[in-house]
Image 1: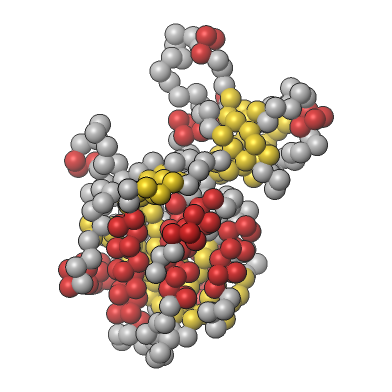
Image 2: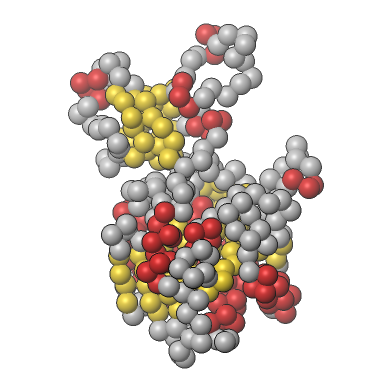
Length: 342
């Protein structure tokens, strides 16, 4: 259950939206001996069928996305600097001065901007917008940069994976933790048949889940995600959304989905019965692949279970190991209940 070494492998892999191949290969290597059917669709989604001890009474799909936020190279300048755009929602402050890997060969680079002594008084204390920044790979000029970089190359954060004192800090916890939960469930003995989907391109508009849900055509779905925890000293209680260390997060509504009310109540009841720490979001914010899945075909009954995560969509997200365990336990119990009932 929840192999820490595999989470590190998944988080440190590079896979922005539309370029998830490295992550997909890790997942495929892990699940091939345990899955009954594996299909990769034309978008790159991995769709898995795992046979359980009994046939499911409801066709259940569990979903997590493989992609992470990052950047894409849009121009190589005469001085060798690279201009770029965000892939997914990244705050300007999360980009500035960060170390990066660029392209398939993972060329090291750093996001650069004006040096401190050239910043005007009107600019001080402000985060420079991404459009004003560039990536420095140390190239002398365009010709040298073009030996290593092409337009359209993917760019990811270069940050270490740390696991100490029950806290994990890494890039791409959103949503490699969800991928880990699905992978571990596929490796386990399931009570009922289930479908598992590792989606692409969630961070740029729920694109992979749109096609995957249409293909699987489930009756019900569980989305496993990471969600924003704003439990910081400068944030008031009503805006903290959720709290690291307080358990799995079950949402009743976000910006893309009003979740199935019976499944929401079911999740809360299961958590109480099994003594699984659980909480709900205190703000209606964000969204995930449930937004596409629940509207697929004639509609899909959908619930999301998330790990609370500080500094989401940055180079250094933070979660609790205990919360990750709670997510796994709740998802497994919820899946068993949904798949086994009419």
